[in-house]
Length: 286
Ligand code: ATP
Ligand code: ZN
Picture 1 (spheres, rainbow, N blue to C red):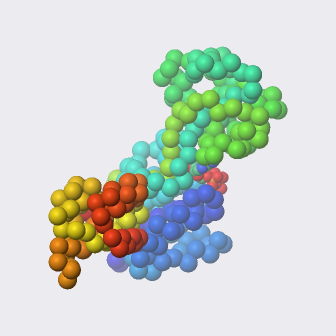
Picture 2 (picture 1 turned 180 degrees about the vertical axis):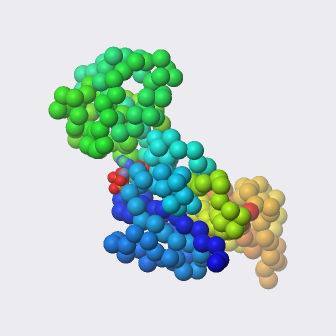
Picture 3 (picture 1 turned 30 degrees about the horizontal axis):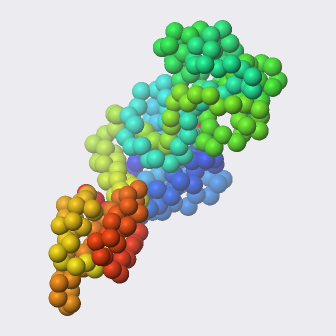
C-alpha cells in the first residue's frame, strides 16, 4: 500500500480554520465536515484527524497521527518529546501574569507564596522554579480569569491575545512570560515513505508562507536610477530589468518584504519611479 501521512488538527476552535487554510493553499483539499473524525484529502496522500487541541501532542506521540498542528503552548505543556518542524505563525498569543487592581506587582517575586491559577502548570511551574519562586499553582481547565473573583487564586497566568477578557474581569496584565503561535509537530520515528511525504508537504508550506510575507512590484524607472533602486529593494538576487521603448527608461520587477513595502514604495517614488504595480504572490521559493 502506498504511504499516507496522517495529520491531527483541531476539530473546532481558534486553530481550525487557519490550519485548514494553510494546507489548502498547498493544493490539498479536504472536506472538513464538522461531524467526522477522519477525512482523506485529495491532491496529496494526507489523512486528517479532527480532534480537541489538547489531545494532539499525545496522539502524535502515540502514533495515532504522524504530524499535527497545535499551539506551541499545548505542545510544551504536554511534555511529550516530538519535533517542532515549523512555526506556522498564526494564532499567536502570550501567556501572561495578570493580577487584580491594587495588587502591588513589581516582578515575578511578587508571586512568592501566592495562589496562581493557570491551565498551564508545566510551563508556569517550570518558569517559577527557574526563578526560585515558590507559589501554589491552582490548576483549572478553563475560565481562568474568574478565579480571582471567586476567591480561589490571588493572581493568574493565562493566554492573552488582545487583553479584553482580562480587563472585563478586573485584571491587569502585568507581565508576559511566554509566547506562542501554531506549530507543526511531528514524530521522529516515521518510516522513510512518510518522511518523504512530510518533506514534500513542508516544501509546499514554506512556499506558501514565504509568499504571504512578500509583495511583487513592477514599475518604470529612469535607467540611471537603477543602482539606487536595486539598493532600496534589497532581498532576492537582483531585480529583473527590461528596457522600455522610451529611451533611458526601464521596467523593473522584484519581490519585496511586506513589512518594508511602504518605505520601499516611497523611496522608489523619490527616485522617479512611475506606474508602480503591486501584486500579491501566491507561492514562492528562495
Ligand atoms: P478544544 O475544544 O479543541 O480543546 P480550546 O478551547 O482548548 O479548544 P481554543 O480556545 O480554540 O482551544 O485555542 C486554541 C489555541 O489557540 C490555544 O491553545 C492557543 O495556542 C491559541 N490562542 C490564540 N489566542 C488565544 C487566546 N486569546 N486565548 C486562548 N488561546 C489562544
Ligand atoms: Zn483545548
